[in-house]
Image (cartoon, rainbow, N blue to C red):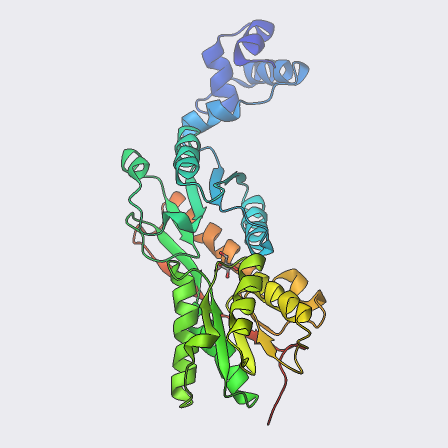
Length: 334
Ligand code: RIB
């Protein structure tokens, strides 16, 4: 690839003159400028992104860490991040953490060494963790998504899961259900806690009672939902409805119920959470709570670039509101 030195040799000028012409950093006569530009065209010169970044101290690149999972939720959020980066002229480097803390720390370190302008983190194994690598790069803007408390300075973008959990249980109550179970995500995760809290608030508000037999903590994965349903089934009498705290677990629940000859929604109503793309194509199509996944991704990029491009330095929390999506897995009893 041609360099400024090659251009200088062909145009018969110094490399600093070439640099001044290309970067327009000092006046150069029209005759010499034309000689330099003509040589650059002839050599098909492309400015070095690294050289440019060293000059403006920015690489126009964002690093993002996600927890890999079979859960399409992450891919739908990343789509919002990637498209926003593209529209704003930034590149995105995506790293999977596989839920492994050491791999995550290594990826953060690599991204920072590549001088990304900022980081978006959506890998909840960092929740509550102190990340020493951030102490080596205190000025790097960081935005976290879908998380609870952090021990490092960052902006936070999240869904209002307390409201979403309340909406889910309230919908079941409004459809006449009085025996309502809950299959939660891992309660070490802030969003899982908030959905469960929202469920409890709606149940308490309606004066209904809880049965420990119908409340199971699971792992946000299909298998976790499948096993959780079988644990509830083994207790004997089923509730009339279950709030399952994400769509992947809801798929596992519906599969396990089908294996037991339980018909959804005739024998058991189910409401999920996320509204992942495939939720409406399930049979029966899943009633769920829509998380604004694409907008979460877009908001994360906007918050990060606000910091990168010199906006406010205060840590901010951006909370987007979930909405109810009624489909075919909840039976109206009243
Ligand atoms: O970790 C997976 C879950 O957490 C997703 O389904 C989404 O609800 C996120 O908050």
